[in-house]
Image (tube, rainbow, N blue to C red; front, side):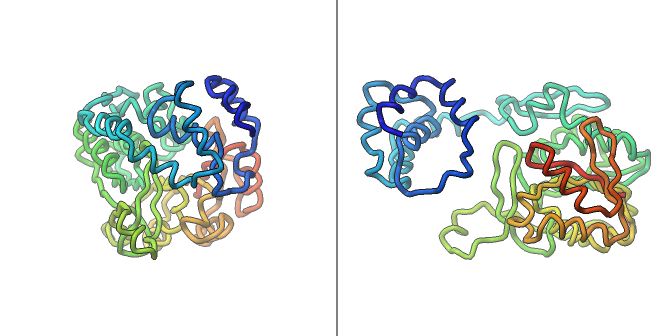
Length: 344
């Protein structure tokens, strides 16, 4: 794109959004050559504003002349970003935090949480998955919430199983784990246990990357500098932390592609208890995080004697039996990055 064209678009955010909506950014080959678009979005994301007309000429002159790394570092090292960073980091712990009253329980959420909090605030967080909880959970049941996030399904489970049952919430993000604990206290749910760790195939460490309340865990990097700069969290095997005499009846698992790793570490529990499992299914993440294909994940769980169903948007399950290709076709047709599936 020539510079004059970009300059005309600079202050037209509607046009920019339209460009992104009609293009296929994943199909654009990566290059180290910096474009005017790179500079504009670095400026906007790092400094939190659009450049004004007077300063744009100087900034845009770096297009094609400066590497992407140098452009990013020029903004990160600027006085303006230092002031913005201090403002962001100086927020009070309870800024944007509020207690949302829901049907049967309350939940602490943050206003700025675009991943989960805003949906909870609107009262419409994954109702199709919540319908599965309503169908299967009963008083006295023991539940595992693997990837508890801010605790919506943890609190829903605790309300449904009553004090005679129990819920173990497994969540590696410390900010999320704190919210789960705050909600547990607000509801008086003594039957909730929070494990601040990632669930995996072996005892050790994982790298945590977060975006709002969502996040991914991955294996440690082999690069010393990259590892030194990473945020690490404990990795635990579910078979090691759930008492062997506890009859777990229901598992919810949503851990952004690490589902295979976590259930591999829960193999003994699954054989012993054969719990109902509701799982987010993200083929695009599975191989990079768990090192297996989506088909291999399905085969792994089905081998325990399960049948699989697709959880439809209205909460009704569509039975697939052991038909893996039917599940893959449903994912391909969903128009999103994941579907939810049920093993029972």
